Amino acid sequence: MPAEPSENSELHSSRWFAPDSLRGFGHRSRLKGMGYDDEDFRGKPVVAILNTWSDLNTCHSHFPERVKEVKRGILQRGGFPVEIPVMSLGEMMMKPTTMLYRNLLAMETEEVLRCHPIDAAVLMGGCDKTVPALLMGAISANRPAIFLPAGPMLRARWKDQTLGSGSDAWKYWDERRAGNLCDESWGQIENCIARSAGTCMTMGTASTMSAIAESLGFTLPGASSVPAVIAEHSRLAVATGRRAVEMALADLRPSSFLSPTSFDNSIVTSMAIGGSTNAIVHIIAMARRAGIELTLERFDELSRTTPVLANIRPAGKFLMEDFFDSGGLPALLKELGEHIDGTRQTVNGQTLAENISAAEVIDADIIRPLDNPISATGGTFVLRGNLAPSGCVIKPTAASPRLLDHTGPAVVFDDYARLKAKLNDPASGITGDSVLILRNAGPQGGPGFPEWGMLPIPDHLLKQGVRDLVRISDARMSGTSYGACVLHIAPEAAVGGPLGLVQTGDLIQLNVAERSLNLLVDDDELARRRAAWKPRPPRYTRGYGAMFLKHVTQADVGCDFDFLHHGDETPDPDIF
Ligand code: FES
Figure (cartoon, rainbow, N blue to C red):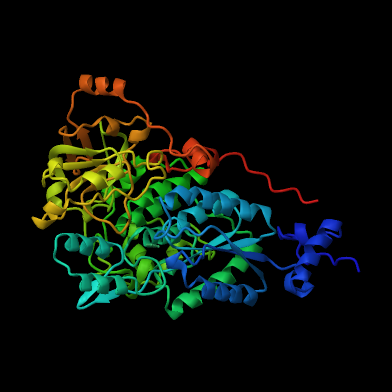
């Protein structure tokens, strides 16, 4: 019997399923071979659920349940749900760093959306790099897409202490190295610090990037703050599925709601939540996928005028569950008032202002008012100077105030292996005034731009009570990390940046108020060192690693691949 014409030829997927052709027959007959009927898919929006679940992604262990709930929502609105597994970037298990693979997942997302009969997508992510990767791919594919954040873990408890994953792991590890924590206590912390499914429950990279996704308009209102394992998260998943079908029918694409204003909103959000320094790299990469040439200068401008309102670790005191109970991101965005431009449309068809109009702050210590911020200026500062001609970043709210204006002698480590081997060697001569330098840890040098920027403090200083030092690197650091860590030095040492010219004993001057970082060595001497500098051989000469080294850009422009920039539209596949 000849195929029935599709009931909705406006749908992208109808190009696959409607034609009375041999190919159309093939597409339909193979779905029928899976047990589907015309009733299931003919003329219905096909909604793909891009699922970043794996058994080795510890933060997404609830996704198998959530997928069922998303499908329920899609079916409720008359869509046809299809689940498509995509690369799962689990922060805790992948080596050398998930950042090596962010662009690979972004490429996979874009191509999966392009090559299949998909009318809209639900993007399921949360653990750090999954968020920017999915959004970068969706922006480039420019198909209707809505993001479902994994949601943070529940707050952890140990004895009478509330623990935050990441931040407290670093803190108690230092206490253990200082001899203040016995094996039994350390084991108890290991057993309880990750209390449930979900992403790190501090304002680490996962919570920061989910908040940014919401401020860009990619989620339902309030989605980014909902803890992973409460009933509201299940209802959010169902509602996200429903909305994806509506987006397919309305053909609501990222290009219809993203603009320079929405990226400004994302920067303001990132600053006001005291978000992860990693956000800068990811926001720039996402903006450039949308054809918006965002630079570090814009972050600097907005950081000077945006107060930090979220009192969440590591910059503050509370955890994400407290943030949610206090009104979550909608309440914070509303509190920001004119710092946020609410006129942009979001995935639910309403403007950001409409989405947050009913929000209220429940606890004004957790989400502070504008007249009582955690800090009057933004959570991440952009610094420049002769050590970072293309910029670098610091999170002053997570650093010891005494170190924000500091001049001290450098102790240089050429790579992380040398740092591990030498850090506790008394001959290294590290004191509380030293400035620790780690180089060859950037996008090319790492390679992959690992989170090594919170350099460990030597044991002998921990035993003396020292808990912070000025630390400078071309690496990133975890969003749950803290300390006077200057990160993302660009250009990095591996491509000839001045960080590669520093020698142990050189004086380094950091002045955060003046946004400056300088190497106090005269130009003639630096020129001599530059003439003697030689690049290290590449770590990878084949495979994905070699492609990464050939095409990754520097931190100040987002570390995307140079060939993935916004440009001429990539054609859809021909369907014969
Ligand atoms: Fe997945 Fe922290 S390890 S969000």
